[in-house]
Image 1 (cartoon, rainbow, N blue to C red):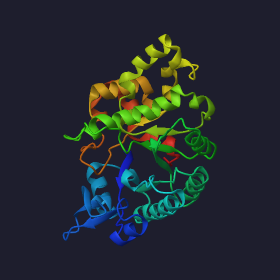
Image 2: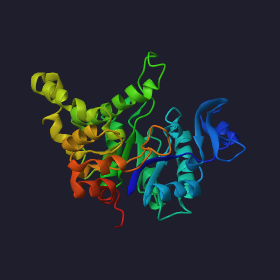
Image 3: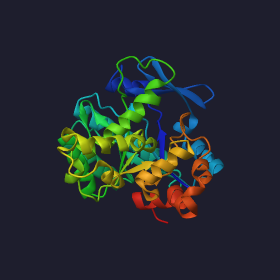
Image 4: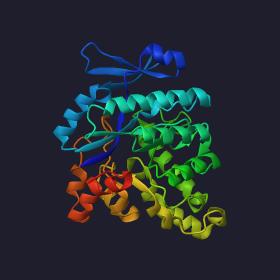
Length: 331
């Protein structure tokens, strides 16, 4: 199996974080046992974590137990640095990419990495994406928006065109979830706003006509099964048929663009995976666990293997083949 969606968080010191932004730069406080800790923002705990996030030996032991041959790791989104001015964010991205490379280096056949970039500045972002690919990255992870810029913004489209032209695969992860303060409990931002953010990213590319300008060679994958995209696509098609304001920039039926996009398989339900593969095609879905976090798939590959409707070939594609083709990985 190849897992295309997992996160790491390096041992960023408090001093290193403070030198960048004393309140918003994240750092890692590891407990005395060396196996647990907290991601911190300033002096405030942000998320409890465990050693697979920063210790690649522990990560590989987990891969062995799960039967995962190769895992692609990317930054935990709190590392993005999108709130900073571009030069500071670009320097931070380069350092985080160096840490990602170092994390994977002891296990080159088991761990590969995605870069991060300073989306605040397209020239800086493209330069770092290209540099990171030469340094061993297999693609780039970006957030689904940069401040008020959704994926249809000209700057974001320019970055995606660059990635298409340079054959840099793109993984889009939701972050900074929409909320007006009502979603206060029960992980509501992660359960409601996060899927909506992913759908927003996908629809912004489609309804804006951006996919008409971006080369079809772009390989772009959205996390968490595309969020709420597959389930509400019929509503979007219906709106396109009956409201001119929906189709003014989108020349074709929105669902006709779905198979230009990819998603991971992190939907946790057989019915949801059937709908997802019906909409996207089983050749456009890749195994993604969201490891090592509690909202991820705790028994990697179990959902795909339980779905007989995929057939042996569909299961093989989702568990391995699609990722090899998407990221250009050797068989």
